[in-house]
Length: 93
Image 1 (cartoon, one colour):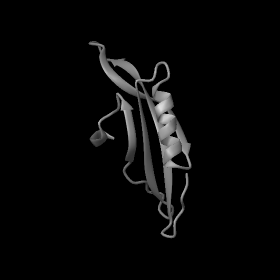
Image 2 (cartoon, rainbow, N blue to C red):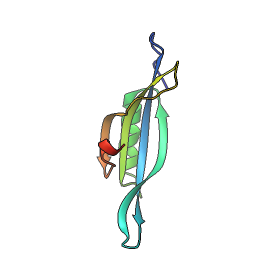
Image 3 (spheres, rainbow, N blue to C red):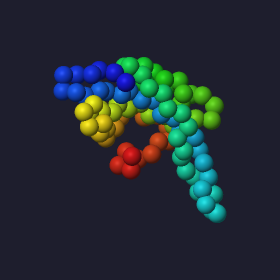
């Protein structure tokens, strides 16, 4: 979490990784969230996503930001910074 501004918003920079799963009787390919890391800058989240994507077992990684309204606790839609490999479609996020 970072960047509290005068409007009462807080920005969260997240790195999220994905692993491959098989679902159902036909063993269809799927994705499952593996790890999440929170950082104070977009550059840190982006760098971690790139490193994680290169690690064994990781099939995809996102770095994104979320804006939280500190008064209501509501969180907006993610704004993607970078996406590596196999990641969920952003419309279904």
